[in-house]
Length: 206
Image (cartoon, rainbow, N blue to C red):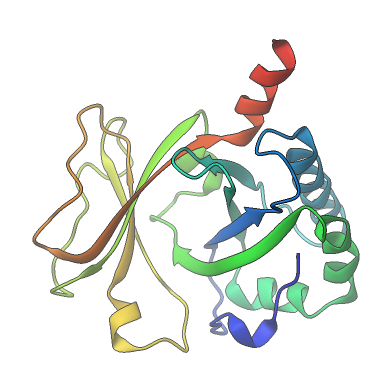
């Protein structure tokens, strides 16, 4: 899995951010292969011991099982950028070369006083809504931080145009979820995913 520094938008910022990384499983591997989780867990442990504890969580797209999503917490975008420019990155990611390929990486802000543990702890299934606000002043968030509510995160990368500045990511934790359209948004995508570590644990117990 290779990352190209210039292909990812960055900003020098000192604030906790959530990395949202999209990966694709190699077509030479079966979709259900514990090796995928193994290389991700190994990378997480190595980064935690040498660089920073990202507390990364891994999810699989339920509609396209070849797609893997990674959520990781960094102290700042500049900290993450420094890792991607380091030799440690090459050592960490080398074992993933035949397993995963890079699709996209973006950064979004955390809700105030929250981190990845509070946001995703115990969330075996996630529904993430990603779209562009028609009006910057509109908020999509309801019951922030409450069980069964919505948590809205805004994209915080620099080097992006005015349209990307309107991009939001909404975690929908409600029991009764909304549909796939909303007049406040353009290009709304609904992504449903399942925790990969939980899923692999179920495979191994069969």
